[in-house]
Length: 455
Figure 1 (cartoon, rainbow, N blue to C red):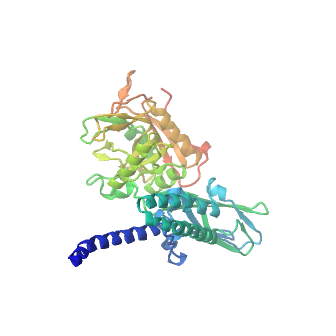
Figure 2 (cartoon, rainbow, N blue to C red):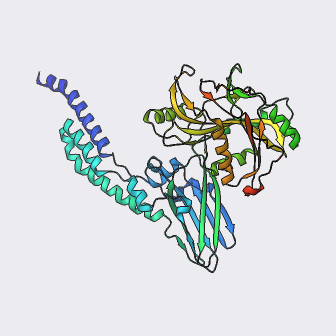
Figure 3 (cartoon, rainbow, N blue to C red):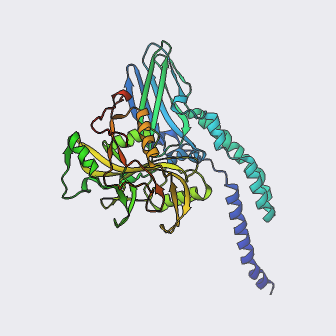
């Protein structure tokens, strides 16, 4: 009988013991600092190098995943992105690297490490809460505390070891290491200023694609967009006529209702669009997927910002937008955004994109979408349109610009409405911009035949 009782209780005791051991192992393993060595870094395969005179600079930008692997912590969640920089100075004078010109909010190695630290107070609190429920686990509190302390010391040492050792590059010297800056996804512009001690000043500009995010335009097959339609090259006069004959507005998917007016035309290669707009601090847009939808929903619920949030589709010539850019505030509810569509038109062999631009100023309830919310736009569409012109002019990447009439947009003293019922007002003109690969001084903007008299 006694043997039967022992057999009856043994499985329960064993189960409890297994549960206890599993919980103990899991709890004691909360702090696991496991950085990967620099020698296995795949991001170095994407490094870019530029040489000017006797200075050579190489850069590589880490993705969120690569950053976590190398440094052992999720730096992106702290808003930090490591940029690897190598500077070789074969000149006879020394140079100073100016990190604030790379990012005014750059982080020192010690600051970045401290922001990523395991919080010992948090470890103590978590251990205490678990210990209240499972009293024997209170003995693990010192273990967790000292594990966090040890991990933080290792973290400090690693960040200091891998960071750029000095901002001064002596003649004949080479300096290499990481600088910690604010996080960007998609395309990142890396600007390095090197100041010499004899009034020498050299600037290096890098345009660096970062793995991880999938921008909307990468899902498009532009070559197959217009089967059976010929690519047509226009001279200036014929282009102006073609732009005035465009439809007035975007539409819904069925093409039965008009949406935002087509108030924007951009001439330039796709690569130029991405490089120039991102240099003016316009962010790319993620493709709409389950993951990006969750990120957007989280930002909406918390009222936080999502710089790369998907943009709802509008349609032109039966297609949703091919590329979108946005400038968001500290909340996803407010942002400037534009949509562009690829067309078979060419000007000076460069693609002509038609689009629409507006400013989101809030969120409202609507039956027009399955998720029953939509952005409310600023009724003054011309303000957003003119803002873009000033923005691109500031980075000196506009070779010509002008305005043409939106003939198809009916003139009315009453406000017009988009697909979600928001009223808008406009002077019924389209802004046309030709992008420039090279710096273009504002005084050279001269698409005179396109510029119309103010209405």
